[in-house]
Image (cartoon, rainbow, N blue to C red; front, side, top):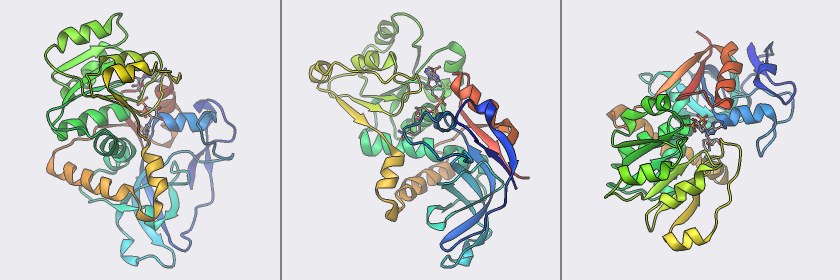
Length: 328
Ligand SMILES: NC(=O)c1ccc[n+]([C@@H]2O[C@H](COP(=O)([O-])OP(=O)(O)OC[C@H]3O[C@@H](n4cnc5c(N)ncnc54)[C@H](OP(=O)(O)O)[C@@H]3O)[C@@H](O)[C@H]2O)c1
């Protein structure tokens, strides 16, 4: 089977297509013909060996996967065969076949394009878990989203809107803001302009900022925290800017505001027996069916497009959620 392999930590251009032996379904496993794989900033970090967890070499990258079950191992209900599933694969998904625990698979309706299913998995589950469980975002509150045109930023805007919140999009260029304008019709701000806080406060006058969604870090986080209204929540999601910022703690006191960590992967791993993603994902899939959310992905190409899609993420050029189509 065709797969993309990482032989040495480094830049995405070092990834090589390989013919690898196809896996089989072991006990408790499902063998899936992969149809689509969502890519995130974290995949580029795994390839660089720069993520907090290193994958032993060589490895096949990719974890957000949708595909059709073609066989199951002993102990798995045979009715799963033929179903389209979505899963966070513990082993590399950038391959034509992957064998993974059947308990990690969630069946998705055939009406949902596999590119959407794979592309929404991590970012939308993170958004709903982060905004609801961690951030207690309420109807009518205002959420400001940093890196708003990126994968997890765009998902947060969409989910917040579905929760009845008002949204503000913040990104680094007019083009990026245009790409997410429909998710945040009220207000969008370019945080690469000097004095973006003043611009924001003038344009947002009369409204609170109840929560900040921060997958970016770097120099933007402290300014964003300072924009929070009293009682606000700053949701720490990631550090795409590369620098982990330090916050003067007096700001939390002065604002009576909270700094809240959002780690959806950690939440799932903490309770794998309950397959903690399933209830959140089921809620999100129902919202897709009702038209309450509209996940947006862009298909970067087939397996050979992996390196260029990861490069765009690293170079801050990616807009929306890149997805790789695998197989027919
Ligand atoms: N906590 C969780 O459970 C969870 C789940 C998913 C993702 N994450 C994390 O969230 C972060 C974003 O992931 P993503 O997949 O959404 O990435 P993405 O699509 O690349 O979006 C990240 C955004 O960060 C901004 N950015 C600022 N400086 C950047 C730089 N030097 N390089 C690249 N981007 C930069 C970019 O927007 P502007 O150009 O507009 O600034 C970009 O759109 C990552 O750190 C990832 O690990 C965490």
